[in-house]
Length: 569
Image 1 (cartoon, rainbow, N blue to C red):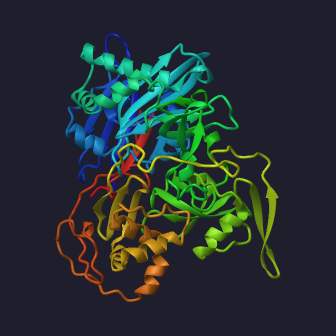
Image 2: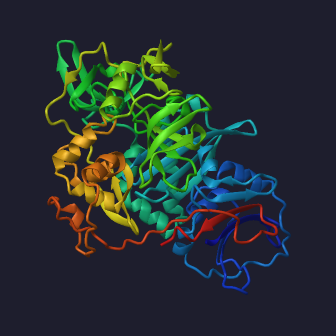
Image 3: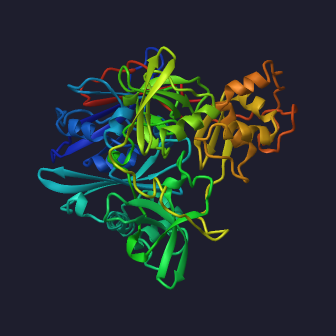
Protein backbone atom coordinates (compact mmCIF):
# COMPACT_ATOMS: atom_id res chain seq x y z
CA UNK A 1 0.00 0.00 0.00
CA UNK A 2 1.30 3.42 -0.87
CA UNK A 3 2.39 5.80 1.84
CA UNK A 4 1.94 8.78 -0.45
CA UNK A 5 3.46 10.90 -3.18
CA UNK A 6 6.10 13.58 -3.59
CA UNK A 7 4.98 16.38 -5.90
CA UNK A 8 7.53 18.85 -7.30
CA UNK A 9 6.31 21.97 -9.10
CA UNK A 10 7.24 25.47 -10.22
CA UNK A 11 5.37 28.57 -9.07
CA UNK A 12 5.89 32.33 -9.26
CA UNK A 13 5.44 34.18 -6.00
CA UNK A 14 3.28 37.24 -5.50
CA UNK A 15 4.79 40.69 -5.86
CA UNK A 16 8.27 39.97 -7.19
CA UNK A 17 7.21 37.20 -9.57
CA UNK A 18 10.25 35.24 -8.46
CA UNK A 19 10.24 31.56 -9.42
CA UNK A 20 9.88 29.10 -6.55
CA UNK A 21 10.53 25.37 -6.71
CA UNK A 22 8.13 23.59 -4.37
CA UNK A 23 8.27 20.03 -3.03
CA UNK A 24 5.20 18.58 -1.30
CA UNK A 25 4.68 15.27 0.47
CA UNK A 26 1.10 14.05 0.14
CA UNK A 27 0.36 11.16 2.46
CA UNK A 28 -2.51 8.77 1.92
CA UNK A 29 -5.46 10.33 3.77
CA UNK A 30 -8.27 8.39 5.47
CA UNK A 31 -11.27 7.53 3.33
CA UNK A 32 -13.25 10.65 2.46
CA UNK A 33 -10.51 13.10 3.47
CA UNK A 34 -8.87 15.55 1.04
CA UNK A 35 -5.40 15.02 -0.40
CA UNK A 36 -3.60 17.86 1.35
CA UNK A 37 0.20 18.17 1.57
CA UNK A 38 1.43 16.90 4.93
CA UNK A 39 4.80 18.58 4.48
CA UNK A 40 6.27 21.06 2.01
CA UNK A 41 9.40 23.06 1.30
CA UNK A 42 10.30 25.66 -1.30
CA UNK A 43 13.35 27.46 -2.61
CA UNK A 44 14.44 29.64 -5.50
CA UNK A 45 17.34 27.21 -6.15
CA UNK A 46 17.05 23.49 -6.77
CA UNK A 47 20.36 22.83 -5.01
CA UNK A 48 19.02 24.49 -1.86
CA UNK A 49 15.81 22.46 -2.16
CA UNK A 50 17.92 19.29 -2.33
CA UNK A 51 19.60 20.24 0.94
CA UNK A 52 16.21 20.66 2.59
CA UNK A 53 14.81 17.41 1.21
CA UNK A 54 17.93 15.36 1.87
CA UNK A 55 17.74 13.48 -1.44
CA UNK A 56 18.94 13.98 -5.00
CA UNK A 57 16.87 15.68 -7.69
CA UNK A 58 18.43 14.10 -10.83
CA UNK A 59 19.42 16.36 -13.77
CA UNK A 60 16.55 15.30 -16.09
CA UNK A 61 14.05 16.21 -13.38
CA UNK A 62 15.79 19.51 -12.69
CA UNK A 63 15.50 20.38 -16.37
CA UNK A 64 11.85 19.35 -16.42
CA UNK A 65 11.13 21.64 -13.48
CA UNK A 66 12.94 24.58 -15.07
CA UNK A 67 10.90 24.12 -18.25
CA UNK A 68 7.62 23.36 -16.45
CA UNK A 69 4.48 25.43 -16.86
CA UNK A 70 4.51 27.75 -13.88
CA UNK A 71 1.50 28.16 -11.63
CA UNK A 72 0.24 31.70 -11.22
CA UNK A 73 0.97 33.73 -8.10
CA UNK A 74 -2.66 33.48 -7.05
CA UNK A 75 -2.20 29.83 -6.17
CA UNK A 76 -2.78 29.49 -2.43
CA UNK A 77 0.16 28.57 -0.26
CA UNK A 78 0.05 25.05 1.14
CA UNK A 79 -1.02 24.70 4.77
CA UNK A 80 1.54 24.35 7.53
CA UNK A 81 3.45 21.10 7.84
CA UNK A 82 1.45 18.36 9.50
CA UNK A 83 4.44 16.05 10.06
CA UNK A 84 7.99 16.67 11.24
CA UNK A 85 11.04 16.97 9.01
CA UNK A 86 12.20 13.58 10.28
CA UNK A 87 8.97 11.91 9.17
CA UNK A 88 9.16 13.63 5.79
CA UNK A 89 12.71 12.39 5.21
CA UNK A 90 11.64 8.89 6.18
CA UNK A 91 9.37 8.98 3.12
CA UNK A 92 12.13 9.94 0.69
CA UNK A 93 12.03 8.17 -2.70
CA UNK A 94 14.11 5.02 -3.09
CA UNK A 95 15.64 3.50 -6.21
CA UNK A 96 12.40 1.53 -6.82
CA UNK A 97 10.14 4.59 -6.69
CA UNK A 98 8.36 5.45 -9.94
CA UNK A 99 8.89 9.00 -11.21
CA UNK A 100 6.37 10.63 -13.54
CA UNK A 101 7.27 13.87 -15.27
CA UNK A 102 5.28 15.96 -17.73
CA UNK A 103 5.73 14.71 -21.27
CA UNK A 104 8.01 11.80 -20.28
CA UNK A 105 7.37 8.08 -19.78
CA UNK A 106 7.49 6.74 -16.20
CA UNK A 107 10.96 5.80 -15.00
CA UNK A 108 12.36 4.50 -11.74
CA UNK A 109 14.25 6.83 -9.43
CA UNK A 110 17.10 4.31 -9.46
CA UNK A 111 17.55 4.60 -13.24
CA UNK A 112 17.64 8.37 -13.05
CA UNK A 113 20.35 8.17 -10.40
CA UNK A 114 22.26 5.61 -12.48
CA UNK A 115 22.42 8.06 -15.40
CA UNK A 116 24.00 10.67 -13.12
CA UNK A 117 27.16 8.86 -12.00
CA UNK A 118 29.84 11.14 -10.47
CA UNK A 119 33.17 11.57 -12.21
CA UNK A 120 34.92 11.48 -8.86
CA UNK A 121 33.93 10.36 -5.37
CA UNK A 122 35.34 10.47 -1.86
CA UNK A 123 33.59 8.03 0.47
CA UNK A 124 34.93 7.29 3.92
CA UNK A 125 33.74 7.13 7.52
CA UNK A 126 30.17 8.27 6.80
CA UNK A 127 31.22 11.23 4.61
CA UNK A 128 30.60 11.12 0.85
CA UNK A 129 31.50 13.84 -1.65
CA UNK A 130 30.47 13.48 -5.31
CA UNK A 131 31.80 15.70 -8.10
CA UNK A 132 29.82 16.04 -11.36
CA UNK A 133 31.45 18.02 -14.20
CA UNK A 134 29.11 19.37 -16.89
CA UNK A 135 28.80 22.04 -19.56
CA UNK A 136 25.89 24.49 -19.38
CA UNK A 137 25.41 27.05 -22.16
CA UNK A 138 29.00 26.53 -23.23
CA UNK A 139 30.38 27.11 -19.72
CA UNK A 140 32.18 24.36 -17.80
CA UNK A 141 30.62 23.76 -14.38
CA UNK A 142 31.28 21.47 -11.45
CA UNK A 143 28.31 20.32 -9.37
CA UNK A 144 28.85 18.68 -6.01
CA UNK A 145 26.94 16.91 -3.28
CA UNK A 146 28.11 16.24 0.26
CA UNK A 147 26.16 13.45 1.94
CA UNK A 148 26.03 11.48 5.14
CA UNK A 149 26.13 7.72 4.63
CA UNK A 150 24.81 5.10 7.03
CA UNK A 151 24.98 1.34 6.35
CA UNK A 152 21.68 0.01 5.07
CA UNK A 153 20.20 3.45 4.36
CA UNK A 154 20.25 5.74 1.31
CA UNK A 155 22.69 8.68 1.50
CA UNK A 156 21.37 11.85 3.13
CA UNK A 157 22.26 14.95 1.10
CA UNK A 158 23.51 17.75 3.37
CA UNK A 159 25.09 20.16 0.89
CA UNK A 160 24.51 20.67 -2.82
CA UNK A 161 25.73 23.30 -5.25
CA UNK A 162 27.37 24.19 -8.56
CA UNK A 163 30.58 26.09 -9.25
CA UNK A 164 30.76 27.84 -12.63
CA UNK A 165 33.65 29.04 -14.73
CA UNK A 166 35.90 26.12 -13.82
CA UNK A 167 38.44 24.55 -16.21
CA UNK A 168 37.44 21.47 -18.21
CA UNK A 169 37.35 18.34 -16.06
CA UNK A 170 40.39 16.77 -17.73
CA UNK A 171 42.42 19.81 -16.63
CA UNK A 172 41.20 19.76 -13.02
CA UNK A 173 43.10 18.18 -10.15
CA UNK A 174 40.41 16.21 -8.36
CA UNK A 175 41.91 16.79 -4.92
CA UNK A 176 42.09 20.54 -5.55
CA UNK A 177 38.43 20.51 -6.62
CA UNK A 178 37.51 18.57 -3.50
CA UNK A 179 39.32 21.10 -1.31
CA UNK A 180 37.65 24.05 -3.07
CA UNK A 181 34.19 22.54 -2.57
CA UNK A 182 34.80 21.99 1.14
CA UNK A 183 36.21 25.50 1.61
CA UNK A 184 33.11 27.06 0.06
CA UNK A 185 30.98 24.90 2.33
CA UNK A 186 32.91 25.89 5.45
CA UNK A 187 32.50 29.59 4.61
CA UNK A 188 28.77 29.17 5.17
CA UNK A 189 29.49 28.77 8.88
CA UNK A 190 30.34 32.49 9.08
CA UNK A 191 27.33 33.65 7.05
CA UNK A 192 24.74 32.01 9.28
CA UNK A 193 23.33 29.98 6.38
CA UNK A 194 23.69 26.56 8.01
CA UNK A 195 20.84 24.56 9.48
CA UNK A 196 21.37 22.77 12.76
CA UNK A 197 21.60 19.46 10.90
CA UNK A 198 24.31 20.80 8.56
CA UNK A 199 26.28 22.35 11.40
CA UNK A 200 26.22 19.14 13.47
CA UNK A 201 27.38 17.18 10.42
CA UNK A 202 30.38 19.48 9.91
CA UNK A 203 31.29 19.31 13.60
CA UNK A 204 31.05 15.51 13.64
CA UNK A 205 33.37 15.18 10.61
CA UNK A 206 35.58 18.20 11.37
CA UNK A 207 38.88 16.29 11.58
CA UNK A 208 38.31 14.51 8.28
CA UNK A 209 37.07 17.68 6.58
CA UNK A 210 40.12 19.66 7.75
CA UNK A 211 42.41 16.95 6.36
CA UNK A 212 40.58 16.93 3.03
CA UNK A 213 40.63 20.71 2.80
CA UNK A 214 44.38 20.75 3.35
CA UNK A 215 44.82 18.32 0.47
CA UNK A 216 46.85 15.10 0.28
CA UNK A 217 50.00 14.90 2.41
CA UNK A 218 53.39 15.86 1.02
CA UNK A 219 56.22 13.39 0.60
CA UNK A 220 57.46 11.39 2.37
CA UNK A 221 54.04 9.72 2.53
CA UNK A 222 53.15 8.02 5.82
CA UNK A 223 51.83 4.44 5.84
CA UNK A 224 48.13 4.29 5.02
CA UNK A 225 48.27 7.05 2.37
CA UNK A 226 46.22 6.28 -0.73
CA UNK A 227 48.20 6.98 -3.89
CA UNK A 228 48.10 6.76 -7.66
CA UNK A 229 50.87 4.78 -9.30
CA UNK A 230 52.12 6.16 -12.64
CA UNK A 231 49.31 8.76 -12.88
CA UNK A 232 50.51 10.01 -16.29
CA UNK A 233 50.66 6.56 -17.92
CA UNK A 234 47.19 5.07 -18.66
CA UNK A 235 48.68 1.61 -19.31
CA UNK A 236 50.25 1.45 -15.84
CA UNK A 237 48.01 3.73 -13.77
CA UNK A 238 46.66 2.07 -10.63
CA UNK A 239 45.51 2.96 -7.14
CA UNK A 240 47.15 1.62 -4.02
CA UNK A 241 47.99 2.15 -0.37
CA UNK A 242 51.44 2.89 1.04
CA UNK A 243 52.38 0.18 3.53
CA UNK A 244 55.95 1.34 4.19
CA UNK A 245 58.75 3.61 3.00
CA UNK A 246 62.23 2.20 2.43
CA UNK A 247 65.64 3.57 1.53
CA UNK A 248 68.60 1.78 -0.05
CA UNK A 249 71.54 2.55 -2.32
CA UNK A 250 69.18 3.61 -5.11
CA UNK A 251 67.36 6.10 -2.89
CA UNK A 252 63.94 6.29 -1.27
CA UNK A 253 61.03 4.17 -2.44
CA UNK A 254 57.57 3.11 -1.28
CA UNK A 255 56.07 -0.33 -0.78
CA UNK A 256 52.57 -0.05 -2.17
CA UNK A 257 49.72 -2.52 -1.93
CA UNK A 258 47.66 -2.21 -5.16
CA UNK A 259 43.90 -1.82 -4.71
CA UNK A 260 43.50 -4.56 -7.33
CA UNK A 261 45.29 -7.07 -5.07
CA UNK A 262 42.05 -7.59 -3.13
CA UNK A 263 40.09 -8.68 -6.23
CA UNK A 264 39.02 -12.31 -6.75
CA UNK A 265 41.58 -14.15 -8.87
CA UNK A 266 44.49 -11.81 -8.12
CA UNK A 267 47.61 -13.87 -7.28
CA UNK A 268 48.44 -11.61 -4.31
CA UNK A 269 45.00 -11.73 -2.75
CA UNK A 270 45.96 -14.18 0.00
CA UNK A 271 49.30 -12.44 0.65
CA UNK A 272 48.31 -9.18 2.38
CA UNK A 273 51.91 -7.97 2.81
CA UNK A 274 52.97 -8.35 -0.84
CA UNK A 275 53.63 -4.98 -2.45
CA UNK A 276 55.02 -3.18 -5.46
CA UNK A 277 58.14 -1.07 -5.04
CA UNK A 278 57.87 2.41 -6.59
CA UNK A 279 60.07 5.47 -6.57
CA UNK A 280 58.69 8.78 -5.26
CA UNK A 281 58.55 10.24 -8.77
CA UNK A 282 56.06 7.52 -9.82
CA UNK A 283 53.67 8.09 -6.90
CA UNK A 284 51.06 10.81 -6.31
CA UNK A 285 48.96 10.98 -3.13
CA UNK A 286 45.21 11.43 -3.57
CA UNK A 287 42.05 11.46 -1.48
CA UNK A 288 39.72 10.68 -4.37
CA UNK A 289 38.86 7.71 -6.52
CA UNK A 290 37.57 8.11 -10.07
CA UNK A 291 34.27 6.40 -10.84
CA UNK A 292 34.15 6.69 -14.62
CA UNK A 293 32.28 3.77 -16.18
CA UNK A 294 35.29 3.41 -18.50
CA UNK A 295 37.29 2.23 -15.48
CA UNK A 296 34.84 -0.61 -14.88
CA UNK A 297 34.87 -3.97 -16.67
CA UNK A 298 32.63 -4.22 -19.73
CA UNK A 299 31.73 -7.84 -18.95
CA UNK A 300 31.57 -9.15 -15.39
CA UNK A 301 32.97 -12.53 -14.43
CA UNK A 302 32.38 -15.01 -11.62
CA UNK A 303 32.99 -13.32 -8.28
CA UNK A 304 32.32 -9.75 -9.38
CA UNK A 305 29.91 -7.66 -7.32
CA UNK A 306 27.05 -5.73 -8.90
CA UNK A 307 24.20 -3.54 -7.63
CA UNK A 308 20.69 -3.63 -9.01
CA UNK A 309 19.37 -0.41 -10.47
CA UNK A 310 15.77 -0.69 -9.33
CA UNK A 311 15.05 -4.32 -8.40
CA UNK A 312 12.87 -4.33 -5.27
CA UNK A 313 13.98 -7.82 -4.20
CA UNK A 314 17.62 -7.10 -3.38
CA UNK A 315 20.30 -4.43 -3.67
CA UNK A 316 23.59 -6.24 -4.35
CA UNK A 317 24.60 -9.60 -5.75
CA UNK A 318 27.58 -11.76 -6.72
CA UNK A 319 28.01 -12.64 -10.39
CA UNK A 320 28.08 -16.39 -11.07
CA UNK A 321 27.79 -16.64 -14.87
CA UNK A 322 27.73 -14.22 -17.82
CA UNK A 323 25.63 -15.21 -20.86
CA UNK A 324 25.83 -13.59 -24.27
CA UNK A 325 23.69 -15.88 -26.44
CA UNK A 326 20.35 -14.03 -26.32
CA UNK A 327 21.42 -10.61 -25.13
CA UNK A 328 23.81 -9.97 -22.26
CA UNK A 329 22.53 -11.61 -19.07
CA UNK A 330 23.99 -12.53 -15.71
CA UNK A 331 23.20 -15.38 -13.36
CA UNK A 332 23.64 -13.91 -9.89
CA UNK A 333 23.48 -14.87 -6.24
CA UNK A 334 21.60 -12.09 -4.41
CA UNK A 335 22.98 -10.82 -1.12
CA UNK A 336 19.53 -11.46 0.29
CA UNK A 337 17.37 -14.51 1.10
CA UNK A 338 16.57 -15.16 -2.56
CA UNK A 339 17.59 -18.03 -4.87
CA UNK A 340 19.87 -17.57 -7.85
CA UNK A 341 18.32 -15.50 -10.60
CA UNK A 342 19.22 -14.37 -14.13
CA UNK A 343 18.97 -10.64 -14.89
CA UNK A 344 19.62 -8.50 -17.99
CA UNK A 345 22.97 -6.72 -17.90
CA UNK A 346 21.16 -3.37 -18.21
CA UNK A 347 19.60 -3.95 -14.79
CA UNK A 348 22.96 -4.13 -12.99
CA UNK A 349 25.70 -1.67 -12.05
CA UNK A 350 29.28 -2.99 -11.67
CA UNK A 351 30.57 -2.43 -8.14
CA UNK A 352 33.71 -4.55 -8.02
CA UNK A 353 35.45 -6.48 -10.78
CA UNK A 354 37.74 -9.52 -10.77
CA UNK A 355 41.35 -10.31 -11.69
CA UNK A 356 41.29 -13.89 -12.98
CA UNK A 357 44.44 -14.11 -15.13
CA UNK A 358 43.37 -16.95 -17.44
CA UNK A 359 40.30 -18.98 -18.36
CA UNK A 360 41.94 -22.05 -16.84
CA UNK A 361 42.39 -20.27 -13.50
CA UNK A 362 38.75 -19.17 -13.56
CA UNK A 363 37.38 -22.62 -14.39
CA UNK A 364 39.60 -24.26 -11.76
CA UNK A 365 38.19 -21.94 -9.10
CA UNK A 366 34.64 -22.58 -10.27
CA UNK A 367 35.14 -26.34 -10.22
CA UNK A 368 35.81 -26.28 -6.47
CA UNK A 369 32.37 -24.72 -5.98
CA UNK A 370 30.54 -27.01 -8.44
CA UNK A 371 29.90 -24.25 -10.98
CA UNK A 372 30.57 -25.86 -14.39
CA UNK A 373 30.50 -23.90 -17.68
CA UNK A 374 27.23 -23.79 -19.60
CA UNK A 375 26.56 -23.21 -23.33
CA UNK A 376 26.09 -19.53 -24.07
CA UNK A 377 28.51 -18.39 -21.36
CA UNK A 378 31.15 -15.76 -21.92
CA UNK A 379 34.30 -16.17 -19.81
CA UNK A 380 36.35 -12.97 -19.65
CA UNK A 381 39.73 -12.90 -17.92
CA UNK A 382 42.69 -10.52 -18.01
CA UNK A 383 44.61 -12.37 -20.70
CA UNK A 384 41.89 -14.39 -22.46
CA UNK A 385 38.23 -14.46 -23.45
CA UNK A 386 36.34 -17.72 -24.02
CA UNK A 387 32.97 -18.65 -25.51
CA UNK A 388 31.15 -21.76 -24.30
CA UNK A 389 29.19 -23.68 -26.95
CA UNK A 390 27.15 -26.88 -26.96
CA UNK A 391 28.87 -29.94 -28.48
CA UNK A 392 27.85 -33.63 -28.66
CA UNK A 393 30.31 -34.40 -25.87
CA UNK A 394 29.33 -31.49 -23.62
CA UNK A 395 30.20 -27.80 -23.33
CA UNK A 396 33.00 -26.74 -25.68
CA UNK A 397 35.29 -23.82 -24.86
CA UNK A 398 36.89 -21.63 -27.52
CA UNK A 399 39.56 -19.31 -26.13
CA UNK A 400 41.03 -16.19 -27.73
CA UNK A 401 43.77 -13.91 -26.36
CA UNK A 402 42.75 -10.48 -25.10
CA UNK A 403 43.88 -7.64 -27.39
CA UNK A 404 45.04 -5.25 -24.65
CA UNK A 405 47.46 -6.29 -21.90
CA UNK A 406 46.32 -5.42 -18.35
CA UNK A 407 48.22 -3.07 -16.08
CA UNK A 408 51.04 -4.62 -14.01
CA UNK A 409 49.14 -3.93 -10.78
CA UNK A 410 46.18 -5.93 -12.07
CA UNK A 411 48.24 -8.79 -13.50
CA UNK A 412 51.68 -8.84 -11.79
CA UNK A 413 52.83 -12.04 -13.49
CA UNK A 414 56.27 -10.64 -14.28
CA UNK A 415 56.76 -8.67 -11.07
CA UNK A 416 58.61 -9.94 -8.03
CA UNK A 417 56.53 -8.91 -4.99
CA UNK A 418 58.28 -7.16 -2.11
CA UNK A 419 57.02 -8.21 1.34
CA UNK A 420 56.18 -5.27 3.56
CA UNK A 421 56.87 -5.30 7.32
CA UNK A 422 54.92 -7.91 9.23
CA UNK A 423 52.57 -5.39 10.83
CA UNK A 424 52.17 -2.43 8.45
CA UNK A 425 50.03 0.47 9.55
CA UNK A 426 46.56 0.17 8.13
CA UNK A 427 43.61 2.56 8.33
CA UNK A 428 41.16 1.62 11.07
CA UNK A 429 38.06 -0.09 9.78
CA UNK A 430 34.46 -0.34 10.90
CA UNK A 431 33.13 -3.32 12.81
CA UNK A 432 30.44 -5.66 11.53
CA UNK A 433 26.93 -5.32 12.97
CA UNK A 434 23.97 -7.69 13.12
CA UNK A 435 20.33 -6.74 13.50
CA UNK A 436 16.82 -7.93 12.75
CA UNK A 437 15.68 -6.57 9.35
CA UNK A 438 12.12 -7.87 9.39
CA UNK A 439 10.27 -11.07 10.25
CA UNK A 440 12.49 -14.02 9.33
CA UNK A 441 15.35 -11.92 7.89
CA UNK A 442 18.59 -10.73 9.48
CA UNK A 443 20.79 -7.89 8.25
CA UNK A 444 24.56 -7.83 8.53
CA UNK A 445 26.50 -4.66 7.71
CA UNK A 446 30.14 -5.59 7.21
CA UNK A 447 32.98 -3.29 6.04
CA UNK A 448 34.34 -6.04 3.75
CA UNK A 449 31.18 -7.62 2.34
CA UNK A 450 28.75 -4.71 2.59
CA UNK A 451 25.12 -5.33 3.48
CA UNK A 452 23.98 -8.97 3.67
CA UNK A 453 20.34 -9.98 4.15
CA UNK A 454 19.98 -13.61 5.19
CA UNK A 455 17.16 -15.98 5.96
CA UNK A 456 17.07 -16.47 9.72
CA UNK A 457 16.50 -20.23 9.59
CA UNK A 458 19.44 -20.77 7.21
CA UNK A 459 21.58 -18.48 9.35
CA UNK A 460 20.69 -20.54 12.43
CA UNK A 461 21.53 -23.70 10.49
CA UNK A 462 24.91 -22.25 9.60
CA UNK A 463 25.68 -21.44 13.24
CA UNK A 464 25.19 -25.12 14.08
CA UNK A 465 28.42 -25.78 12.19
CA UNK A 466 31.89 -25.39 13.62
CA UNK A 467 33.78 -22.28 12.48
CA UNK A 468 36.25 -24.42 10.52
CA UNK A 469 33.35 -26.04 8.62
CA UNK A 470 31.96 -22.62 7.71
CA UNK A 471 35.41 -21.47 6.63
CA UNK A 472 35.72 -24.53 4.39
CA UNK A 473 32.40 -23.68 2.70
CA UNK A 474 33.64 -20.17 1.94
CA UNK A 475 37.06 -21.38 0.82
CA UNK A 476 35.44 -23.66 -1.75
CA UNK A 477 34.22 -20.46 -3.43
CA UNK A 478 37.54 -18.72 -4.14
CA UNK A 479 35.88 -15.53 -5.40
CA UNK A 480 34.67 -14.78 -1.86
CA UNK A 481 37.15 -13.00 0.44
CA UNK A 482 38.73 -15.66 2.69
CA UNK A 483 37.64 -15.33 6.34
CA UNK A 484 40.32 -13.46 8.26
CA UNK A 485 41.27 -14.43 11.83
CA UNK A 486 39.30 -11.60 13.44
CA UNK A 487 36.17 -12.00 11.28
CA UNK A 488 33.10 -12.52 13.49
CA UNK A 489 31.58 -15.98 13.23
CA UNK A 490 28.17 -14.49 12.45
CA UNK A 491 29.60 -12.87 9.28
CA UNK A 492 31.02 -16.22 8.11
CA UNK A 493 27.69 -17.89 8.92
CA UNK A 494 25.81 -15.26 6.91
CA UNK A 495 28.09 -15.79 3.90
CA UNK A 496 27.53 -19.54 4.12
CA UNK A 497 23.76 -19.02 4.32
CA UNK A 498 23.87 -16.93 1.12
CA UNK A 499 26.47 -18.71 -0.99
CA UNK A 500 26.41 -22.29 0.36
CA UNK A 501 22.72 -22.79 1.09
CA UNK A 502 22.65 -26.13 -0.74
CA UNK A 503 25.47 -27.46 1.41
CA UNK A 504 23.71 -26.34 4.57
CA UNK A 505 20.46 -28.03 3.54
CA UNK A 506 22.33 -31.20 2.61
CA UNK A 507 24.07 -31.31 5.98
CA UNK A 508 20.86 -30.68 7.93
CA UNK A 509 17.90 -31.76 5.75
CA UNK A 510 15.40 -31.42 8.61
CA UNK A 511 16.59 -28.84 11.12
CA UNK A 512 14.58 -28.45 14.28
CA UNK A 513 13.01 -24.97 14.49
CA UNK A 514 14.81 -23.10 17.28
CA UNK A 515 12.79 -21.72 20.19
CA UNK A 516 12.02 -18.01 20.08
CA UNK A 517 13.83 -16.16 22.84
CA UNK A 518 14.78 -12.56 23.48
CA UNK A 519 18.35 -13.19 24.51
CA UNK A 520 20.37 -10.07 23.70
CA UNK A 521 23.37 -10.39 21.36
CA UNK A 522 23.01 -14.17 21.23
CA UNK A 523 24.26 -14.30 17.66
CA UNK A 524 27.40 -12.42 18.61
CA UNK A 525 28.58 -15.18 20.98
CA UNK A 526 30.77 -18.11 19.85
CA UNK A 527 28.31 -20.78 18.60
CA UNK A 528 27.77 -24.02 20.46
CA UNK A 529 26.97 -26.87 18.07
CA UNK A 530 23.25 -27.72 18.01
CA UNK A 531 22.42 -25.23 20.79
CA UNK A 532 21.70 -21.86 19.21
CA UNK A 533 18.83 -19.60 20.22
CA UNK A 534 18.27 -16.74 17.75
CA UNK A 535 17.65 -13.17 18.74
CA UNK A 536 14.11 -11.91 18.19
CA UNK A 537 14.71 -8.27 18.99
CA UNK A 538 12.83 -5.78 16.92
CA UNK A 539 14.90 -3.13 15.15
CA UNK A 540 12.49 -0.87 13.28
CA UNK A 541 13.76 0.40 9.97
CA UNK A 542 12.32 2.99 7.66
CA UNK A 543 12.35 2.49 3.93
CA UNK A 544 10.20 3.48 1.00
CA UNK A 545 9.65 2.25 -2.52
CA UNK A 546 7.12 2.19 -5.31
CA UNK A 547 5.11 -0.75 -6.59
CA UNK A 548 2.41 0.76 -8.79
CA UNK A 549 0.33 3.86 -9.56
CA UNK A 550 0.75 7.01 -7.46
CA UNK A 551 -1.72 7.65 -4.68
CA UNK A 552 -2.84 10.96 -6.19
CA UNK A 553 -2.85 12.39 -9.68
CA UNK A 554 -1.18 15.84 -9.77
CA UNK A 555 -3.03 18.75 -11.29
CA UNK A 556 -0.22 21.22 -11.96
CA UNK A 557 2.74 19.09 -11.01
CA UNK A 558 5.86 18.81 -13.09
CA UNK A 559 7.26 15.73 -11.34
CA UNK A 560 5.71 13.10 -9.09
CA UNK A 561 7.56 10.55 -6.93
CA UNK A 562 5.49 7.77 -5.39
CA UNK A 563 6.51 6.18 -2.10
CA UNK A 564 5.33 2.89 -0.68
CA UNK A 565 4.06 2.14 2.81
CA UNK A 566 4.69 -1.59 2.63
CA UNK A 567 8.42 -1.17 3.16
CA UNK A 568 8.10 0.91 6.30
CA UNK A 569 8.00 -1.12 9.45
